[in-house]
View 1 (cartoon, rainbow, N blue to C red):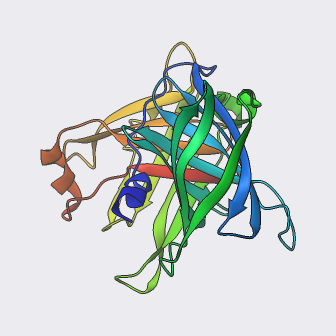
View 2: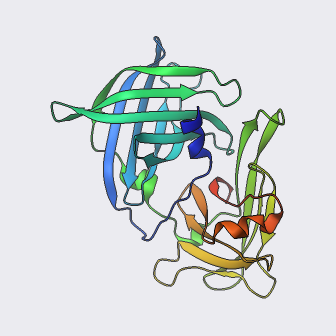
Length: 256
């Protein structure tokens, strides 16, 4: 369970408009012994893993976004609904069998109940997926107004998460406001006279220092369906919000 929780806070970096893809996979098999499932994802040079999970026998089957990262011993993902609710944690360990990719180990865990299902009989069906659908970065004109995620917190017995909102402040400039409650509350916004400035070359990211004038800094990297926030300053700045927490996370676009 601990290794699955690593994907809840993602410290990720993105540096170009088009993804530099290191790996692509598509697997089919079952969740537990009987629930058909299909998983496809790709991984870029910054170890960001993005794709979808699909349950063909669901009442209303539709692909579900998964976002995670590569670790030394596999991949971890969160399963995101369109409103940002996290409905599952995935762990996958990929190996090779006769030169062909194989899933050596995999599991899906319910974040609310902690119930785990093993992925069984998973067969690699392709090593080529629709990469632009997942890993291409956002055009600055399409940056959304609001992004969010939420996940069940067993300690509080409630759904908790974060939101980030953006509004234009001139050419390639935007104001932001962030509220993140994992594991504690971190809140901050751009200064009235100091908006965030998008990167000069691609305009799909920004860095912002001295949030709330307390020394904390972070970066925002925009993908088509989500934004990744990543702390860029040292551990000493995590007390900026009084609770040793930060903005880090994957926030799903919920308002254009």
